[in-house]
Length: 323
Image (tube, rainbow, N blue to C red; front, top):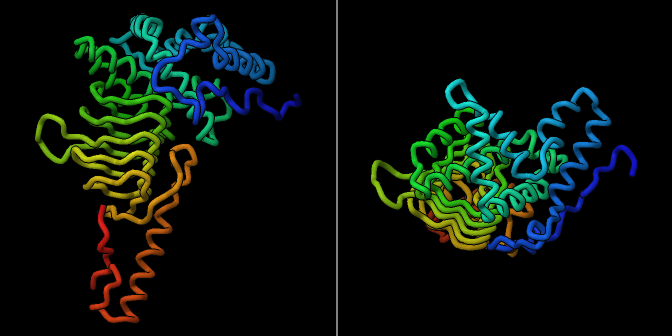
């Protein structure tokens, strides 16, 4: 292997795309084997050799620990600490939750594989655990969610507050989020209290899953498995984004979106049906171009045939198809 090649380029089948399992599979951890953790340690050793100035940083964050949960807990505790919520206290909280919850142990591995597979800026497994705030925020949320469900709500909200302050990502601890999730960049993401996100969803920066007012109860969006939410998408209310749907960047969604469809615009309108099972894995989120071509084509047709023609475009140029 030369210096430009990175080990573990293809990832590990048990955590990737089509072999994702909704339930924790103890195939590795219960047998004492953990290929992702082994990869992280090997990457850290190689990076320490290439950049000796980072050797202490890599040792403290990765090489001093015996498992992924301990290393991740250390990193999160040091990122989220403040003068009244000490790193040692946070480390105890993170370790207590992550070391004893097999669901979280599964999720942190499926999530890190999602970052490695889908984010071209994620150079390695170790870079995700050390540097990517989208990954950090997601794993800290998972601990807060566990605390919330254990009726430790004040502590869960304290974690939410620190996650928002440090990472610029606001996820209510009561929200339900599957595994194999990518928060690409993550800045400005807001996920409300009753939101539900399925497995293998990809979410870009600036996405809001919000309510529509001051109503209480179930009031936030439900995102189906394999969906892709482009940058700065806003989805409001207790509506459903179907499995394998794609919402183009900058869209405002106020109605249900069918499974395996593309919507775009403000308000979002149906563009087409797609064949991809999980567009979140392909990460092709340039549907806005197609939307504007669709509108431009409608204008041309309206001009040629007159405003009364059934072109699917109103006199103001808005497409009539809705979500």
